[in-house]
Amino acid sequence: MERVVSYAKASGAVLLPCGVDERSSGALLRAAAAHRGIEPFVGVHPSEATKSGELGWLEGALSEAAGVGEIGLDPSYSPTGPGSDQLKAFTAQLEAAEKKGLPVQVHSRGAEAQSIEVLGGYRLKGVLMHWLEAENALDAVIERGWFVSFSPALVYSKKIQRVAKRCDLSLALTESDNPVPYAPLGGVRGTPLVPSVAFKLGELWGKPFQEALFLTAENAMRFLGRPSKG
Image (tube, rainbow, N blue to C red):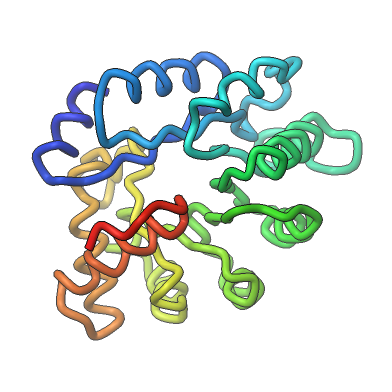
């Protein structure tokens, strides 16, 4: 965490880190209290839904958080159907986000249509679809005015490049998905690669790097409901 914070300070970036369970969410809140420029999201990731237990801790955590995440559905971890732990955790956290007026960051791999349907039942301040690579889901996401974030995989994935090229420029954000290492990029972990994501977005959109960087930063502020950084 200290290394990531130092990098963000040096580059002038704002961090939007996401928890995956109670422990990691608590650690992010403590880091945000100790360092400026951290906008912590707290929540239970689909991978942790079967072992998360009760979510009584969430309400208190949300009083200090910028949003709810990383939450969502992913059938590669456990069932996502009616009565499943994943669906219960997802809906409970969406209810909490709606009640608190907070944006959500959503993991929807392999369950894009189901995630979109569930999200449609809530009035949310903002929705960010993390690492969306389902091309057939993009139109529905754009129609709803939801944001889409692109990771360093954009640099080499033709599929994600097609999604980015079609994405509304006012709805695109960059992300690191740190601490995931990117084997095709030499095993480097995500944070230092974020400028490369902005550069690739600019290339795909026919925009200079600085303009792509500015657009995605402005989009991030709108997603958070924060004033423009100018």
